[in-house]
Length: 553
Image (cartoon, rainbow, N blue to C red; front, side):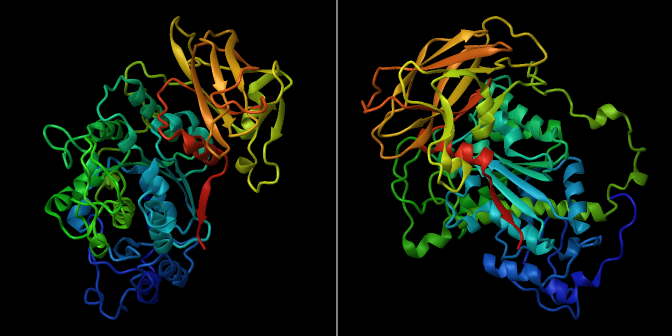
């Protein structure tokens, strides 16, 4: 931080330090302190449970309005699993750290921060024994214990079985303009090896650009998860270090955009390979798991579960989630240390450059990638205005007595064959250019699917754009009523109009009724991976309109 800091406050020593969790290791450049290092300082409280951590945080004095020199006092609110050496290995890229150090300065000044976590099933918490044991909650536990403030917020936007495409389309709806820190954990769900000019890599870059363009200028951190049992090739059916290649490619984006990146693989691979207790990978905790090539994966016995790192083929167990949280925490430790230190003080180097273009976001790294992408993510109330004309359709709630807007399942509904609704949207890839002939956009129309009273509808382009006619089917046998995705492609046009008409024809599972309910639309030029359609559309809707938020007590 430019300017001078106040002297280190005694609150971070004595009784204050006693409320911070002790650890045998510290982050990069930070020594692990013990009572012997600080004569007269009480033993630090070690908290192994979320409840203990909350008590520890509550014991700290208020830090509002004060700047602290706290780097040596930062601790994990649990016994750390990683050594200092392993933490250093896990840092794939730090860069200038400018945005992250701004977050550190805000925390040191006693101000609250807002954190968003974007990712797949790991971020959602899969593999952890409880939401509190998942890495987002563990990270929040670390921040609340070391920088207590009742205004801290964690908003977890993890959606299982998704890649970056859906976040690229819906970033502005998922992350608010006042975000301070955004964690992006999507590597494991990206295509393992794709050209940078491929659609999925372009979509990933657009996600990063959208986050970096937010008005609050949040710090963005890439977290590269590593799944031992999905890393196969060249004669190995598991544990291949250099596969998948997505991590290396996405780290290049970190280098281009000056975004810190963390590598779980680099941090723990030697431990996985050596079978160190707590990091063993030759077995998993969940049953009926197979390798990518179909070989059964051994299951750990109950008495040896604590020795193993993975819950299943793809997801870490509780210990793995703690390790991911420790890696992210180590970045914050490093940022605090740099904010307090003089290792990169301006007086030691050339005068700081003031050209405004250096502060702006650089042009896209991937040649031809759109600088002003046109994507649409309209769900729930935002979807209402996408329907510009209709006859026989009504905007209403399917379950009006449910507690949440998502649970109420609002949408445009019709019950009579011949009823129609027209949707209009911009399907161009770049809003600053006219669409070139022959280029397509992908449309993902969310609708209700149920086991009774549902029907089908014809979907056709009526003006502006062109598309093949398709049939939307709202029927299935499953005893559940869920949002599902009807996907189709349209040509690019500034005013693409699509008509949905309720049909007399029965669906795959004939039912008494013809009800069709349209609930959301996404338009993207990048692939949206949604492998488990039964639940993913519901999770996406919840992430856009009903975030999972955790606040400090």
